[in-house]
Length: 195
Image (tube, rainbow, N blue to C red):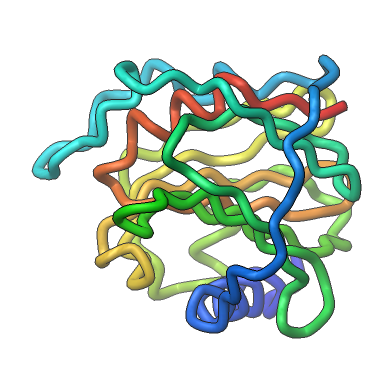
């Protein structure tokens, strides 16, 4: 893995949140079935010490499709989805954000050129030595390889974040949210499909 690739992606993601402009809405479209990562970490223990967002009470009835990267997922009423190019022009950032609280999920997508597409705890901590990882669990992305779901100290999410990172079709997906959104992200990922 290129040492600076993940570090740059994290920095770009944090900068992207600060620079986010809510003027480019993304249309809701229907979804096709494809590679399914929905069971990636559905059986992980809930994050402790936080007020969890009650995803089971929310009905994920709206669909988002990203035609550029070929994936789709569902999200609930009261949330908006926006996509914008990353500041350096490489990749995109998709935000799924609560219209009232402005909290939600960030999906940072960046080009990935390393031939080893298995994202592991060791690989992440080698590239980002200061990153804390706990409760790590492998994510199966079908024939594309394996990713990692984990809890971290991402400052963009109050220093207590749920992360899911994996590589698919030459892109690194870094899905990040507040640890209190653990159930929300599990429900969102239960609807995720690559087309």
